[in-house]
Length: 190
Image (tube, rainbow, N blue to C red; front, side):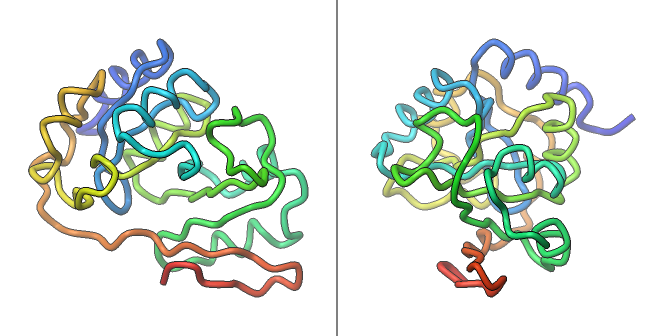
């Protein structure tokens, strides 16, 4: 049994009821919700005071899940994503199944396959993608560790994960890339 089993159960209950969570990711502390629940996604935008034009990142547990949510991914996408040596968010064209408020206006979506044990376990148990956006009000500094998360965010979510609240190690934000038709990467955020 993992340290985070109680957190996973509580998160699943909240997420299945359309709620929001504050949770540790493979990069920074994040605000999350069921990425397929448009009303829950609206709550995230409202809490972050984020403009709707700025789309959100989605986390998946396994690279093969990309095939379920992207219309025409690069043919070697699974091998490519599995070869990344650091957290990398990829912008894909032709998002499938996501509500309009998760995708960009052009139909693209930003997806990161997480290697974080807590996030992987949560997504697998939820059996749905998870929204992942930094746990801060738009324009405020990103919360790399739990103690940096503002009370506005803490008081605005439906559940706060206890796991890793005392972890003070800081990880860099994910690299942001786009895969071109020839398989080359365009780095948007190093």
